[in-house]
Length: 406
Ligand SMILES: Cc1ncc(COP(=O)(O)O)c(C=O)c1O
Image (cartoon, rainbow, N blue to C red; front, top):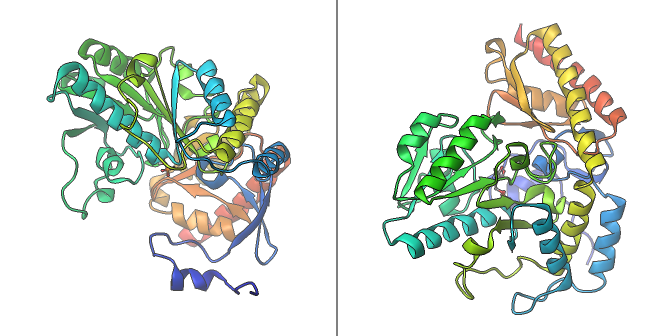
């Protein structure tokens, strides 16, 4: 059969319309460059939404993909496999955790975390210990449990009755959290930097306060590091910067550099409450994904690579400062490592999408976090030449938006 001819218009004919991609169709990537089907090149500051942390087509990952692809892709969880055992050992050696449960996405890793927290609470204290505390604007995925726990009602409404026993509190408001965490609380779930809602870092004192309150009430502290994990903030996991550990940590996105894989990490004591058959997955922990993730973790946990994250972070912030000096475009530039948000000033209110579109027209793939925040989540090894060239293009794109805004 010959190859079927497709283009952007095909999207509107055959895809369920939950996304609205721009007019070009990305086709090929190398490092921090992407080419579309017409052969135009783009500098990639989005990294597939904080996923391709080692860039596109990293040679060492390609090697693993080919070697493991030649050997065994999938066996099912009725059996185990060496790549997943190696990956679990690597992650538990690197972190607070003793145990790993593998899934295929961030939402599924969170689903496992929330179910485990409920199970742990009920086993330890009875049926009333089921309350999950989460924060407004947080994002934890799109399964029904995770949109209900997430703090953006628009994602959870319109689907009928939601799971119960979930409360939302203002992020970074420790007094309100301390009031709310009580004997019924089984878990508090928090992003160390809220990614989707505008790149908002947690105050260290807020996280520390949550830790102490969870200890007092025998509630589990879950860090959702789906976006912040795997080197993104300059340490392998963001919690490592706060001098404390969570009870459960979820990770996905950069873990597979684009191969779908997620993980829930936890301690021996908590993991013991997930007995054989209590939770499961068909694909989670398959040897192909696990071998790729194992190489990703090996490469990204290298201290030299992590130092490079902070160097690139500073370079991006310098460029953003320069744009700001010229156009007064940003109210605040914030974030950690290579998860950076630039919040638009009032003069450019709701213009983030305009900047994103103008950037695409000038050869840059950008990311936004809501209508007012430009988000940068590029490869952690982005070549500096690409970074500077990307900002030259962004500068031209922003010039155009500024001219249109006058
Ligand atoms: C903090 C956080 N948690 C969970 C998710 C959901 O991950 P996935 O889309 O892989 O299900 C995301 C995705 O953006 C995220 O940023």
